[in-house]
Image 1 (cartoon, rainbow, N blue to C red):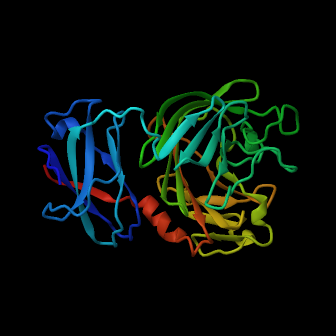
Image 2 (cartoon, helix red, strand yellow):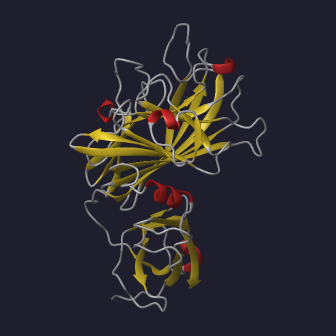
Image 3 (cartoon, one colour):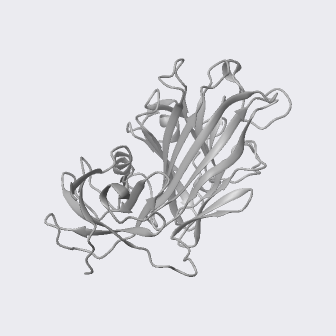
Length: 383
């Protein structure tokens, strides 16, 4: 194997759960470790080694984000309590012409982003010409697990989205419906301002977006920065990680935030689909109006079974969140309220969306939730 002068070794600890192609990501500043690092010219190479530094695998795909100084790759399978070691090297980046299409790519189509993996659409993020941005389709290996626009009932239930205010409970603005007239309108809107970063590569795709939330009369409720990362464990296990960072919502009433999924009608959640939550409740009516760390919904999609598990992060206020359907059984939402006083000027909500093959047990939803809230531990052991 070719040797490089600039080399460090990092140790990865699995922690309390088994790992399967988990995403390793940590803050890393190459300038601190590599004396000849040239920004925009040098690249990082990652390979797996033994604890003594002997090579096990050749270079594996990795991704360095220069804006955030974060290095990522997918690790090999690792049992709970075990460790593995990786070598990070700095080397010149050979010119590539033309640039290859990355495995995880973002295509800006003016009114929406297409996020693809291996040239296949994972999801489309619709952000212009809508009352609130939403993800649709959100594809598993058999098709989309969420419904698109224009449904016969509740046409504002579209895909996967963040809503605010419900139907105006307690006087809060309504950025749930999309009506200009009473009884639910005039409704507010969540409006796209700009994307501050679009990242693509061999490990994940990510976008950072600035938005504003306004009332029906145009008054500002809050500013938001939205961070979304997409990646796969494999074709049957696909992930969105979503972070909403907002200013304090200047509004009255309950000021509720809801992550909402309007599921594909083919899944038949009302009578045939499988619904289960982290507390052991099984069935649509059993999970309704219960607090839970995650909830999973699965059913027929295309020629197979796909599901969508929504993950509530422990850092969210009122965790575990309050789950329920609103108006129709084919939909599921998770509810949070901001505290009356913030520790700093930012209110943050974090969610995970796990699109999978099969039902809850087959997809190991419980284990993947643990992996979501317990990322691998990284330690630099030799440099």
